[in-house]
Length: 229
Image 1 (cartoon, one colour):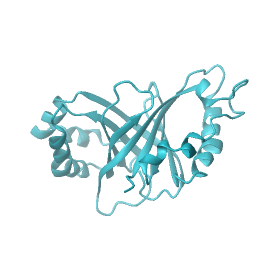
Image 2 (cartoon, rainbow, N blue to C red):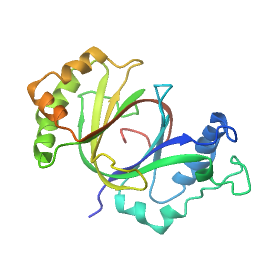
Image 3 (cartoon, rainbow, N blue to C red):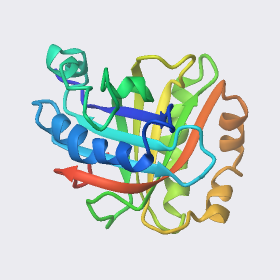
């Protein structure tokens, strides 16, 4: 049976002397996303930018898939990676930008009652690796406590959770990914801090083996975008 998932791509420009952020965005929005959506595996695409201007990898793109194994197909591999937006002679995106590409399998989701089925202004991308042997407790913490404490935060809409299937090049990538969506201009930090104050949260967070957390603002959405990520 097909396992749904998400293609998660965190990128940065590596040759700012050769390609501007404007040209990078033009390639992504006008060329790459249409190439993505022209395949049989994708019907939506989302782009975000880290709200921290000092972030090493400011760009995040996410593409839901109905079958995560399709990401290993020849059709996926044949998506074009060259464009005149990038200088010659290669014109390859990989020669001017670096892409941390990961394939994730869908685990579970929670949505606040009444949340609109549309992408939100902000998303927290939280990659976490729990301590060895604590995966079941980690999952129970989310389902039995963390969803409800997040739901009490102003602007919170939903959470979608995933498990890593493959990381193309990242060293020691985190095992689990949670995408927390907020419909607000500024995250409710005081509310979020409270979610980490319970004994169970302290136990989970204090024993993590890895954490990769970023806050991103929506910069574009394409295709069938309702309630996707």
